[in-house]
Image (tube, rainbow, N blue to C red):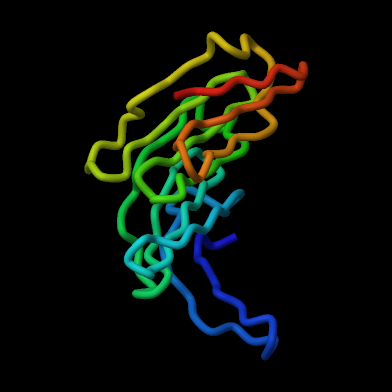
Length: 146
């Protein structure tokens, strides 16, 4: 629970690298990796208290903290867009926050609750072709955000 990311090679059953300080606010509770068009790989990590960080897996370095989800303890599922320009995070209170990775802002570019009310978000995911975001909640509602 030290906020580090350890990359594990399942073929050799060994740790091949550690990235320190990915989560400054407790254990990492979620992660999502994506290949970039440059051939590099990035990953989004969600800390227990709501910090969303982007990590460059090839360079084994933190790119930056891209945002915080409020209310922090209510973080849920997350997704990084296929071109690594956005991170979406769902909340157990029905909120959906979208962060723009191309800026240094730590404020979400979109924050919505209209589609799901107070029903907790169970799943978020970006479409690889259109970039649309789909979210699903505990009551069975599926919303598509464009």
